[in-house]
Image (cartoon, rainbow, N blue to C red; front, side, top):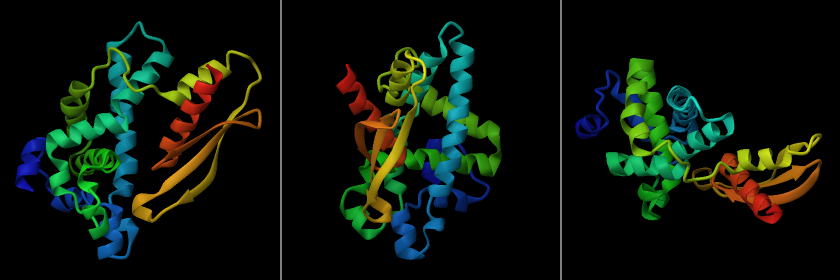
Length: 223
């Protein structure tokens, strides 16, 4: 863990927080038979801390850009692919605690798992040392790795909303059709509806990613 702390640039007072951040649900279920011992709760917290820091950075550094562009840039900077790049730079995959099946199927290099680990590490730093070191980590690794000039990965939900709401009175909803697979490898299928009519479906490893995929498919149909 010492090498990882050096790579992160933060020394933990409570090393169990870092260990928890690296514990995938497949490991927690296999080892403890309890998914609450995985990094999923930390991921939830880290996602919020990351989003706030990136949003503040964009607000302060891009005073001439409208809300829609800021939203797309933020989505690009915190998307799965961007966070996976950061995880690989830090070598997080080497330290991940995975269940046997996930380990042999290449989980240490799976973008979704790596991205979740980055968010979990951010939360662990936040809980261990407060907001300042968490913000420093985000500035050091996230804001320097992904440029805020032009979004590379479209925030399809925002783009779809902007397109549909050019006409007044339009209601957009996302509905979960089904979910399948074990806890450590879920697949979600979501449909996006406009005024109650389905206009696209999407698949993803989380509801959030399935919604983005549904919005992407809907945009392609409309355009």
